[in-house]
Image 1 (cartoon, rainbow, N blue to C red):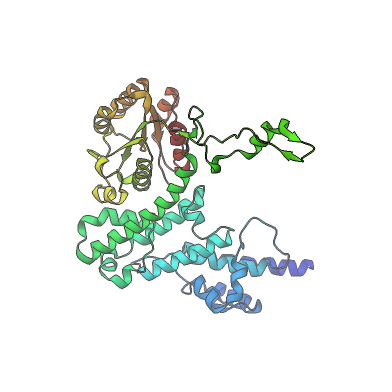
Image 2: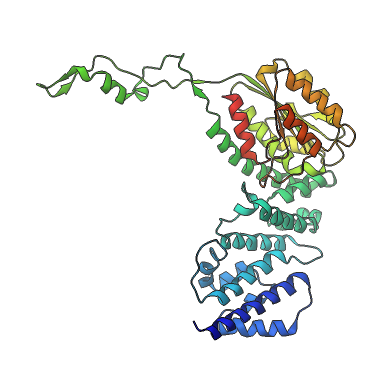
Length: 436
């Protein structure tokens, strides 16, 4: 490629990206940039719909299936072919514009679903599977931005009207942002709208529960209990050990190994009877944690010999233990929002501690207590000193991004029980270590 052609390509890329920026930060068209961009896209023999923000990426690919492969890994960290920089700039601009320019005003269920499809194409362009950046562990700042955009779209929906229409309600895909809005507004719903809201919450709970249940099953099987003799059945036969132990019985004349003793594998697992007390801050900043922790508590409640108790609090505390096996019912009984009063929750949790050294207390909060910091910490320190394994968690969400009161963070670190990252798999790992 000549120096002149490289310079021309750089100019065309700049035009496309200047148009993108003008569209992202201003709703007014820039005629010169629009005209120049149309010419560039035409020269590349790309569809002009690529420049229309009203056309979703999904619709574009349906009309032009050959573009699907080009969008895949478009922005992934890998080597791209030289000479395609302008074409890639045009395709990248389409993804960025459709995902990050969400406009203003009311949003319909169809528009929200269209944005989710475009976000899925954006994730494919980043080299991820659909939903991976928005909902998986480790998405980081980009995951937080995408979740914020989705949450804003949900807030701009006339959700009550959508829920009241079964056809529109079917277009909704459960997400954390949507569940948050449903939980906040559930007291204002009735009839068909309430039934549709419950169905969406149930669907989301079941989907998340399946993922978390898999994680728990992988990490909480327990350790082999060698004090229990192995069952002498064929499926437990340790063939390799049996052969090794009977090698002295090998007969060269007969070319046979005579076995006079069989050896079996030990399969019994040791489980420790344990009490798990989960205390969840249900104030407005902890919605994500509330949803995930109620589901996680229900899963651990289903494990053998684990006695699970669940308490939620804001300015008051509520004991949700009777419904701990059903996270759907727990969520319907929560009232999201309000302030924080940790000492009230501690007063409800402490009587549940009967055997401190066989108890773990998980406290999920941002620990912004607004005047009750010292009383809450004193209660926590007392519980910790008694022998209870105390696990403070900043939040339990997909991205792990959560603000925690610096005063509490330092206090917990000095106590020897630092706040763990809010990613769900880390909490599962901590609990696994206690229960096995």
